[in-house]
Structures are given as C-alpha cells and as structure tokens.
Image (cartoon, rainbow, N blue to C red; front, side, top):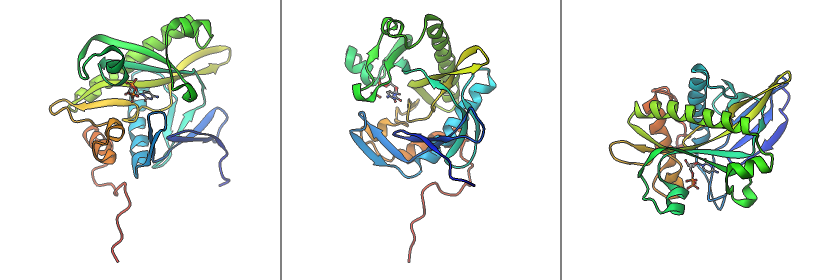
Length: 253
Ligand code: CDP
C-alpha cells in the first residue's frame, strides 16, 4: 500500500489522509507532554491504550446518538475518523474542582461543584490555551450563538455518559476536555465530537481510594502512567484479558 500522506502532527497524535475523501486516519503516539509541552516523555504503550479507550467512549457516544467523528478502529494505533473543521476551542467540563480551576479560584481539589461547570479555552499553544468567555468567542467569530448552544448541549451529554460509564466501574469523573468540529452535509453544517476522549484528557479518580488514573500521574510524577491507563481499560473491559503485552517484553539473552 502506498505510504499515507501526513496532514498534521500534534503532541500525542498524527493525522494522515484517509482512504476516502472526508476521512482521516488518526495515529496515537506514545509521546506524553504536559505544561504546554515543557515536560515530555515517551510512555511505551500509551498510544495503544488511548486508541482503544477513545474508540470505546466515542463508539458508545455514537450509539446513544451523540455524534462523534469516530468511524472505526483500524489497528493497534490507528482509527478512521471523519474529517472535520476543528472549532478552535477546548471545551472543559468539571464536576469536581481540580487543576487550574482549583488554582484560579482557591477551591480545594476534589470539592464537588454545585453543578457541572463548562469552561472554554482558546486553542492556541503559543498562548497556553487561555480561558475565554462566550463574549470573546462571539466577538472573534470562533463560533456563533447557535454553535455555542449546540456545543454546551454536546458537552453536557458527554458528561452524563462518561460519568455514568466511569461510576459503574468505581471511577469518579472529575473533569474532562473535548474538542468539537464542523461537518457539512450539503449546505447543512453540524457539530460533532472530534479529537480523542482518553485518560490524557480526563481526570479520573478511584472512588474508594482517590488514586489518580489519568495524566496527572505523569504531570505530578505519581508512578507508572501505563499502569494507570491499563487499570482504566481493564475495569471497562476494553483490553482483552489475555491480549499480548502492550509493552515489549524484555529480551533475556
Ligand atoms: O490539566 P490542567 O491542570 O493543565 O488544566 P485544567 O484546566 O485543570 O484541565 C481540565 C481538564 O481538561 C483536565 O482533565 C485536563 O486533562 C483536560 N485538558 C486537556 O485535555 N488539554 C488541555 N490543553 C487542557 C486541559
């Protein structure tokens, strides 16, 4: 098969031209970055886990009528997705205070919020993805008022779905980030969930012990990131129990 054309390489994924017009192949790398790429490492097996976990969440959302870009998983590290025009916003939904919200507002990490709070950040690494209001979004034309109504409703539906799925396996969904994209069916434009949903973009805490099972393990040097993500995958029944190890076995001469 001819080598696929690379369209874009980001911090954790590479996008290649898909087999049909309007499709893209999304490749999950093992690279981990945090603090706007100031901290970097290669975590063997992370890409395989995130490919599987994102498939699990996105296909579940598709099944309950929340539209996503996910079409099918192709192999261990690649999935076929619909090409979208990304809305330049990171949409964050929070159920408990953590991370930047705790810092900004002085609320202790883990405090339950009175209701889910949705925040928007402008997607620009060179600016460190600054928090913006709907005023900025409307004034600069990043999304219309109708788009914002749709984005809010998508974000809250993802929150309900993910919270339930996680709670069923003893995990608290503290917060998460999604990205949305535009697809065109003729003249009709609609918004769908794009990018990935994985422990790279969520905060997941064990309900009993509070143990962190997400990228904070990497950000805060709390142990093995692969072990944490494997634990999430195992609880959800995503990784086949007898699958080959994700990390290469050490060769003993
Ligand atoms: O994660 P950090 O403390 O930098 O920022 P946050 O605003 O507290 O992040 C809220 C949630 O969005 C966390 O689950 C992050 O993992 C996720 N997030 C992300 O996936 N990508 C970003 N660029 C920013 C936040």
